[in-house]
Length: 323
Image (cartoon, rainbow, N blue to C red; front, side, top):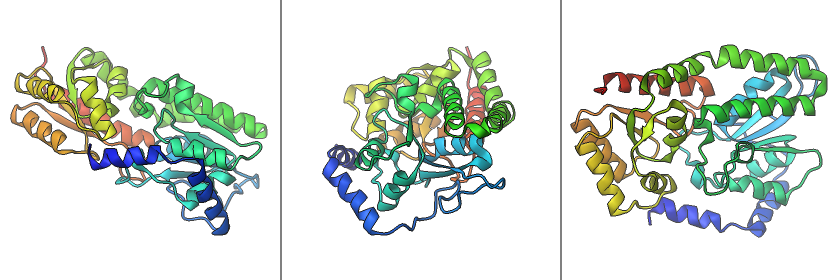
């Protein structure tokens, strides 16, 4: 097992006592909070209208970016995982994270086992009136399913609808404002993102592609692309375990015989196996496009980050030899 896989297994063993100790440590550390990851601070929760902002914690900045844009001046959003070099699978929460979650009115967690530490911290420090959005539960993906739901266009739109509805429930006085924010985001903020998805699906649906890990699967499904790489290979790389020899052989052969038109890989998780596949694809003149697991740069909006990646995929597909 790889070092990454061993770390993940150790994290899965973290129980309530360890989490409780973390929360206690956070209380003893005092009330000061660290700098929020990208989208506002809980130390300043009064909007320009004088209204108190909804204090929100998003486990990942991919959801935090959306939450911040939908809430505008009436929310204060702190994204915990925001550094481009952070591995969300292996993240270990800090005392500052515990404090942020303890004071949050609204929490957005990805779920599907991706950020199980959030539920543990919340359970260790219950708070009346706090609302939690579990994306996996919202979109019906159970434990063991693909957790990378922000790469599913349909799931993204469902999350947008739910967050907006939750904002209006928490702060009904500003319902009209939240409705306007959602409309602006869907029609203007996501315009390039939505158009690229429609164009790619229309032109390249059914095209066979290869990939380095399962992060790409929800996007491939949303674009109508056919994923040729064995699912077990994709899951192994994503989970930090070693793929089987049979899966490695299949992935190699697909490239050698040009059974795939393009190859997509997560540049934030380039294992030796993945690096070998990327090199092999380039040697076979198979266009390669990259994706990342978190926002790059960390200050980018969700839609700009996604649209830039979609343009890269579009360029790769346009260079490929189409049937």
